[in-house]
Length: 385
Picture 1 (spheres, rainbow, N blue to C red):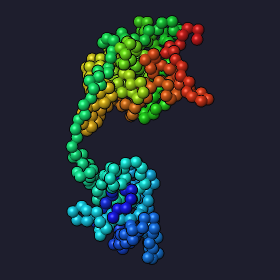
Picture 2: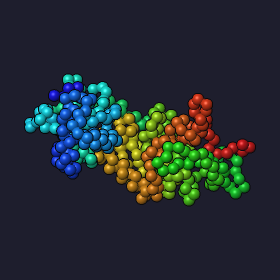
Picture 3: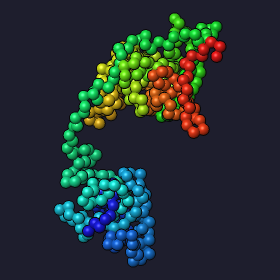
Picture 4: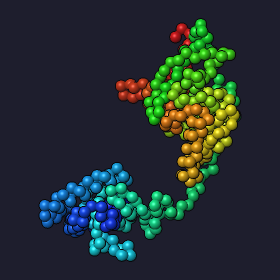
């Protein structure tokens, strides 16, 4: 009889007796005897001898070990027993350690209207899940999903979300000097967005950048690349340009159409033509992550649903992303940890200090008394500034 217990992992956790035989037999008997005695009276504990106090502590320690692995769990309490009879019926004759967790909503219990998931494990300490049962069927076995999946049908406009006014060219990524103050050595003072591995905060830095034919190119030798955000929702033709340091790119360009929030096309590169090629290939894919060197696509992941989702198997998508990351390290020379996160957060204007990129160029982000203060940030220092 299950009463109204709420069970671990949005369902029932059963641990076979052999899984706890790494402990001595006496401790195992105490655990079983204790939890069986408590099963009929949830919340009450039976203490036949002083040893049960130690068993209580041991079961609670096991509960604490499972806490980081829980899903939608409140606090964990050790009580009761898992009674599984031959044939898979629920009874009280066979018992093993069980842990009850307080859950909310439509999960966490075996009852009408609840979603019951049964997790079978072969080792309580390592918590090795051997099978997962959902409803009447086994849906996972030894780390592999074995249930049936039906592909949903998506609206056609989900596949037409990348809208560019026209194919981009190298000229769209040129940073003209304009009326910026030129130093006597032919350089100009530029704003540079500093990024760090696995970091979401950016730094507003300054650098003297060389002027070539009236424009400011990337300075790969100094570790400074261009960064661009291409507007892709309304075909406005906007391309915000800036400079960034930290990605370590030495050749080519890479970019993505996935950035939480604005979800524009963000590109980092040291070659203007390759940056244009990245943007155009992303548009052809209707979204994705692309790396280009010398006009050649060296790796890509298509994300054709709204520009940031895929219909492919998750294993295939993960493998493709790893290939892109490796290609960026091997072909572009940018062995940057947290590459996708770094690019995504840098292209989210107005979320975190100190400076970000948008379709209108860089913006500074400062903390005000009650909210963040976002201001346009001139890329090049103007004459007289």
